[in-house]
Image (cartoon, rainbow, N blue to C red; front, side):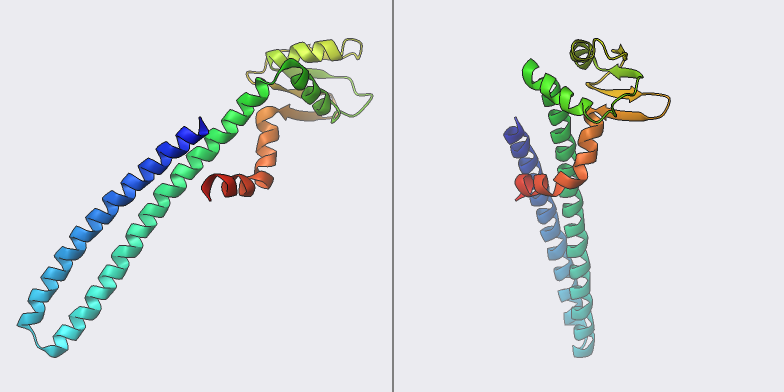
Length: 183
């Protein structure tokens, strides 16, 4: 599925680049023709002045086009990165029961021992927590719209939602994902 997304993004980026380059060529040809006619009408000094002006305009136009292309590419990369994290979050929620239970167990290890409180969880997470924490004095609710949980006590609150965990990991793993996806 990611391969298809990459192909679609690559195709869109290539089409946009081709369109921009074609537009650039037309504009450049028009500019060059206009200025050549003016050269014939003016003397050598004016010709040199206009050549310099053309080069600056072309350089500015190229820079503008490159900025537009880079902006579109970055926008598409950003959309793709967001999609990757959404799919990762959904993939965690779809883990087979044994793996899902192991993940929740590891997440529970971040709750300090001896604290009682309330856990608000996603439906699948709440079912797993109810099995694991039958005698620990925790109130478990399945009110979250996403998987993972939030532990609340009078002393602290610990957010262990999958989206929150992935968000925290994002700073560390974004450079590696970018290397893999966009190399």
